[in-house]
Amino acid sequence: MEHAISMTGVEKHYQDFKLDNLSFTLPAGTIMGLIGENGAGKSTTIKLILDLISRDKGEVQVLGQPNRALPKPLREHIGVVLEECTFPDTLTAHHINKILKNIFQTWNEDQFHAYIQRFQVPAQKKVKELSRGMKMKLSIAAALSHDSKLLILDEATSGLDPIVRDEMLDVFLDFMKDETHSILMSSHILSDLEKVSDYIAFMHRGKLLFCEEKDALLDRYGVLKCAKEDLDRLNPSIIKGVRQHQFGAEALVDRDALKGTWTVERATIEDIMIFFAKENGR
Amino acid sequence: MKGLLFKDLYTIKMQSTFLLLIVFLGAFLTYSNGNAGFLIVILGITIPVNAIAFDERANWDKYALTMPISRKDLTISKYVLALVVLVLGTLLSSGFMFFIHKGDPAANLAMIGGSFLFGMLLISLLLPLCFKLGTEKARLFLIIIVFGVVGIGTFILSNDRLASFSPAEASLYTVVGVIAAAIILIFIASMLLSLRIMEKKEIV
Image 1 (cartoon, chains in turn blue, orange):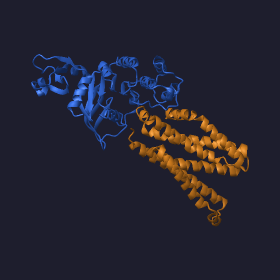
Image 2: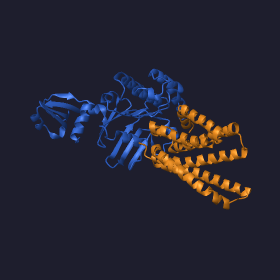
Image 3: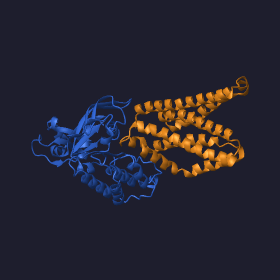
Image 4: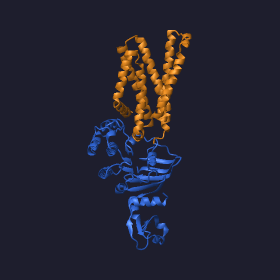
């Protein structure tokens, strides 16, 4: 299996929104960060991958098999953490262990308890009494306590404080030590994605603007700070986006194609996302 | 499937105050009215519908379908739950009838059997509505369904009609048998309909 996920020409039409011709692959053994503004289509993409909603066009493969009617033994290997905590709110971690033990054949009770302890989730408290951070940690513990080879995380780290987020990123990197493991994670916290991702896929208004290796992206783009007039002297094809302010202008530029002596700063994923979104009409 | 039923039973256990109240009310009404059959109907409807409402609130289906669980499993588990609750309700209600009310055993059995079938008919009509419209809207239909079923039942069994229809005991058994078979068929048809609904549903 080369690809953990592959989408080819996937489309989904709603009255006021269209997911357009979406194609990308998540190579096995890598982490892909899915970024984009609210309503860009990240959650719709994840729902399409999980076959929760039907697509109008295209093909989706998960762990090397068509995602529709994915055989149950293969589903054992997919760990999912959704944006909201989806455990009935009157249950406790203790109940959840008993339920999932009867759903996953590969459920590892000891591992679940170990995670719960490590994450300091109170095992006897009802889900509704837990903070958002605790709920997410509970969901992450569950996703890691069966034989997951692919993790799909939809905003799994939002609502967690920076220290816990860092701890979770370490847990995810630990998971990646097995080179057949892969992660697709959407998040608004771009610094997290910048830390762990191998690939960045950027969605904007239902379209995939790019899906590239993170290091290549960071190498290629830079932020040029100059006077507004200076921008006119540049070849327009190397400018990927412009931000003007009172004292001058900033432009996202293709560093290799930039000739001459300019002050170019390293672009972050956040810079790249904002400049691209501006250029493509916010 | 077992995991799904476990989840439902745990969430039901958490509503134990409500359930105890119904059981006490049942015991009291059996004592005062000599009828425990309604207990089967009330439990048989509220527990499965509440279980679906809990799933809706937690968005459980969305999560469950990412696990080794199919849409078919999700649907059938609710029908199994309904049957389990109907059977447990029947046992409880029989206990009340025979130990609190006492009375004619044949009449008791007739009332319990009738209530079981009535509960089964109502839940068969309700579950597809719950899957299609959600429990919030389906509950509105509950009133219409109960009045409809009771109305039609009373119309058929009204006195003057019964007077012209005085079957021998043997054919009375046939009538009861036909009604029971019809309700079982409705239950199965309801499950098939729910499976179709869930197969196409967009889980958002």
